[in-house]
Figure 1 (cartoon, rainbow, N blue to C red):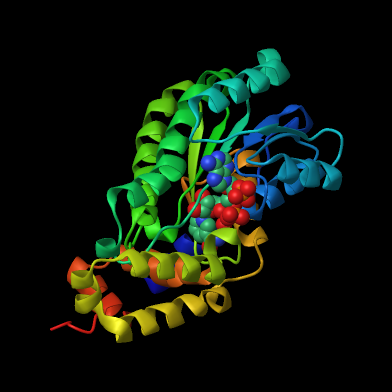
Figure 2 (cartoon, rainbow, N blue to C red):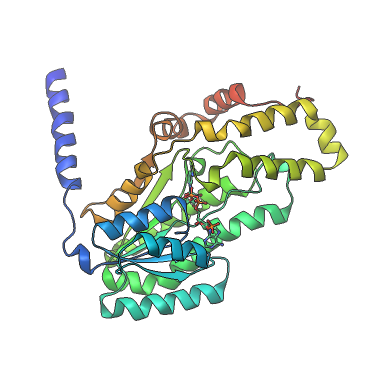
Length: 317
Ligand SMILES: NC(=O)c1ccc[n+]([C@@H]2O[C@H](COP(=O)([O-])OP(=O)(O)OC[C@H]3O[C@@H](n4cnc5c(N)ncnc54)[C@H](OP(=O)(O)O)[C@@H]3O)[C@@H](O)[C@H]2O)c1
């Protein structure tokens, strides 16, 4: 009985591996549009797909970022300036993409651009702090997608949305986790709707990687600003001891982050080039072995684990 079961699981794994290794044809004719290519995952993915011979249309927030990327890549790769929070910038970028892809349509759209500050305990934040992150990480993803969809539908292509393990288990306050839960929900509805048109939607859920988004310095600086402007009531409830532990945990953020960004960009590349992409990709051992399994636990168990590991306010009961 056990032998049959093991053989069945082995066979299923083998078939899955073979299926996932099938690559789409004519990659060199396919256009991929990536947001947030100045640095981090977007930058590496643009270079990786360029090396693979695909036609990369890289959107950068700054001209400096675009120029640096062009200097490192082939003449095939083209750049455009895009701020995903500005409708006129999205409209202009869509027209630019349309002119390049012509009747072939857009094979891949990668919604990668994102920010992570201001983040901290929810009570330290105001509505504008939440809105700032949601504007880039969620509304930006939605508006870019809606604008590019006719082109993606034409190519029966792929949409790849970058979420996070914080879109599965949220243990920090602020707009970041909310935005990533939103990206998961948006991608879910999109996947079902677009399946009728042959378009595939994949979600990338990275763990912790060393990029500008996860930089200790940036998070420390932001936390200090939030604390300085917090009300005396909030300061009294949380206390100096909490602040010190909070800042210490932010200082160790860089150490906790992995340097090998290709663990994430390889998932993105697979989602764009495999005949049978996955619905979800998790990158990093902590995502695969800790946070994703935790997302399936009963809430009381997950809360108990996170409570044990968290820094407590000075006035905690
Ligand atoms: N690093 C991690 O541990 C981690 C984990 C899970 C998920 N993620 C997600 O991965 C994605 C990429 O982040 P990353 O880690 O590679 O960090 P990153 O290096 O900071 O990349 C983010 C990119 O987005 C750009 N950007 C910021 N605001 C923008 C706007 N309004 N319009 C267009 N582009 C904008 C940034 O441009 P500038 O460089 O010019 O500011 C940068 O190029 C994000 O969605 C992030 O949430 C990261």
